[in-house]
Length: 591
Ligand code: ADP
Ligand code: ZN
Image (cartoon, rainbow, N blue to C red):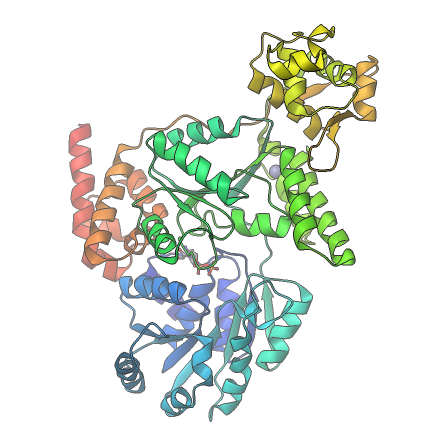
């Protein structure tokens, strides 16, 4: 393994393995078929790339998406590793050239799309190739139980059987359910496989739920405080995406948008701009994600609550794939529940499945309400035992603020709901408390109620927020149906009778003020200009964590720079001097 560590330093500039990596690599090097289940961002690629570098011959890597292959290749070439891919984006002549090179042993890794394995031409071409290892990325695509079933993955098993000399096989996935694992092992024909499971926890991600907040305002403030970071904002509908996108552009933010209603070209451009850091905020529906492999997404904000925890964790998990901190924020509003219920009603016809979907939705809603550690909630949901105690890295664990007694305000809202006979929605409740003078209020005659104008010192939005918060914490609830009305719960009634008080921690809010980071800005700009010149995404030049280490240690010579995490030999050669110069300049200006 010392040899492998040296390769890790030399090509990737990393000093240590991440959890699980050493075991998986060791297992493959010993010739044991291996199934590795690791969460997104845990570092699966290195687990087959390092054995590929260490073993004689060429590793074949099966990968499902053309865009992912290209990203991987850019990264490998950036690190000075010889590799190529073969997929449908190439001409016949290009394919032949690469196969020719492969047979001459010019690549350590050859990436192929699964369809390719069915081609007789390809099978013949690789017949006399020395295959060091066969790696299957996103191996869950082979299973119909998974969410990304790809029929062409079924060609992999027969392909392995067709090889004269069977190489060791490594299968990689983030999906851990038993059905999927079983399918992978059987359908690939793994022999006495070793299974490595590193768990679903993503320690570098923080989780926060924010309830009853003005979402648009929150997002604007958040982006203002996180200008130099890349982030994704997921919204539930195309319309919501369009609106938020327009608002952000109007405020001058470098935002892009992505949803299924846009043309292919428009979507591609938008995705490309995001990967290249031309824009920093992507406003999108859940159509955005499959196939984006940007490792340095620093935050994922959910503008609406998604339909279940699986979807949430997958989308939020797109933050921090490079292992650096990522912030996952869910902006909860009670209306989102109605929307998701509506979508289930519309799309799920089978009665039993519908009940299942409603159950999973409820687990999602509970996540938004739980006062306990959010990470523990997530791990428990996915069937894992969390370490005892609070995680210290989620909104609920961090909410250090003392709870405040808001009983009086709460009683006023609750009594307004009661006076309105539990027959109206959130807006009217807020308008009555505000003492709004509009046609609806006059027509309904609610301006004569004793609660009219009872909280007029608050803004209409603040009153809606407060109502939402009381819904989210169970003092009120919304009825089902298209036009939900606000109703009292037993807890709410008790407060109204003066039998219980309402204490609420001021909710922990993500930091909304920017920190000064001029060297980071400078290095980021340099990285961007080099990346543009080379036509690769910025993270291929250096990861965020590498730039951050440079800011912290301020290396001023090549020797010191080589010690920074992520600076391998090739990158030192290619980019070292430019970055050293930028750091020296910054030091000079500081003095
Ligand atoms: P996955 O495929 O599991 O989602 P990747 O293989 O894309 O994850 O790795 C995610 C990120 O972590 C990449 O930027 C990679 O360079 C980085 N990484 C992987 N292994 C290590 C390590 N041992 N030390 C530091 N960074 C690592
Ligand atoms: Zn926690």
